[in-house]
Length: 141
Image 1 (cartoon, rainbow, N blue to C red):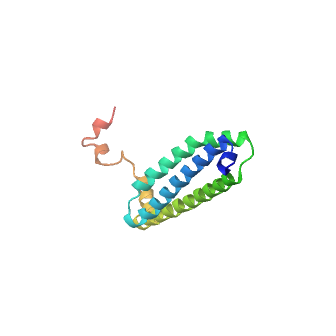
Image 2: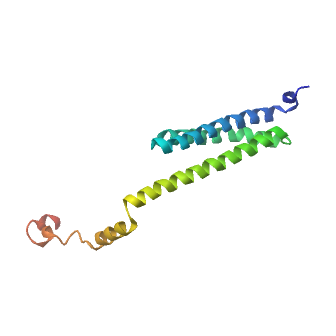
Image 3: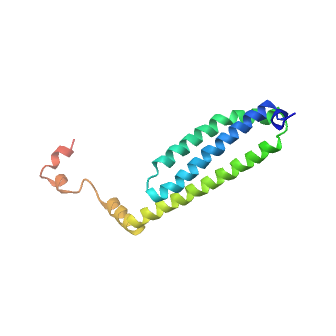
């Protein structure tokens, strides 16, 4: 009897799902790394969206396998690998987000943003020349 035949069918399907997830995570991770050099995140965003759909689509298969009986060692190893890779992808996304935030902070220093926000908060849109006579009548009901 071969090792594949010894694995119950629900776990065979689960292992195939995990292998597919492994490939999708690897592609998204590599695209995230590539986006740094290209300064283009669109492919990364697309692959992460595809991965999200794959995770959702494969969850029922994994849940059904978990209910069918004990997890075979090969499936457990794959599941741990996928979980580790998802954590690595999350860490990469966090680094990329932090990098973007640092760039925005350099472009729009917080002190400047706060100063303009305070000025805008003090401005009364009805205190300008239109409200004080010449032409201001159209604002009045």
